[in-house]
Amino acid sequence: MIYYFAYGSNLNHHQMTKIRCIGSKYLKTFSLKDYKLIFCHPNKLNKFGYGNVIKNKGSETPGAIWKITRKHEEILDRYEGFPNTYQKEYFYLNGKKIMFYIM
Image (cartoon, rainbow, N blue to C red; front, side, top):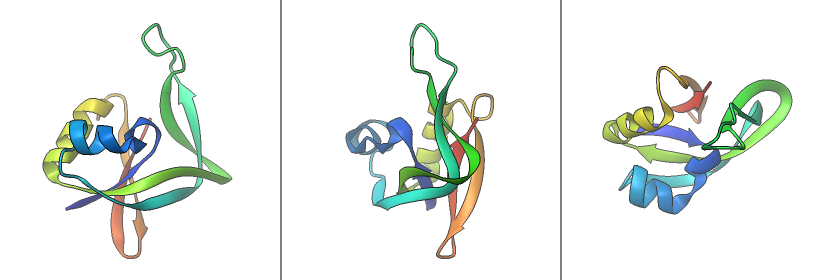
């Protein structure tokens, strides 16, 4: 199992459990400390841009922790454009390694 910190559109419970990562398990809300939520790269298809987090001391990004499988991770990798658009970073919470995406 993989622990995943979701923010932005991946906070949509229906989207995560019924479309992208069927069978994934929502664990809890969580705020990622010292990261700020921003939107970048607006275009004709997405005028507001794409959600991203940047290091910013004192900021917090609201999100959620999910338990996902390797297959779910592969699906999210494709959706998020890993490794070309988003990269993966990690943090630890209560001894568990948590993955999240960052541009």
